[in-house]
Length: 143
Ligand code: SF4
Image: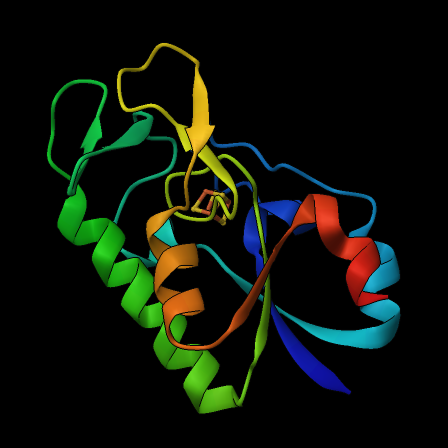
């Protein structure tokens, strides 16, 4: 069965900044066709759970208390890419709106609960290296 990388929180793992999951029922259909490889770039980048929310601002990623977590996000993204290369993964399903995993939208960098067009750090890196990235809203395209 073909392997596919998936944001761990979409499968219900409690990895998001609130210490909760973002379970998406569509993953059950995905399971029938793919071997799901769960991954959370923020946890793999060394951040705690729960943690303060982060947003991308220019070339940096900052927490809402001003902490610069750019290196954590980059580490998580690089680990995701390394895992894809190691396992021969060419597709990823990533959680929309996240500063790591967002594939079409991210928050605007001012903690105003406003979304803008953009990609999270991991989504951007994977796409730049030729991996197909889909949000959970696009799972139907993979079935
Ligand atoms: S970094 Fe990605 S996988 Fe981890 S909690 Fe955030 S959206 Fe989910």
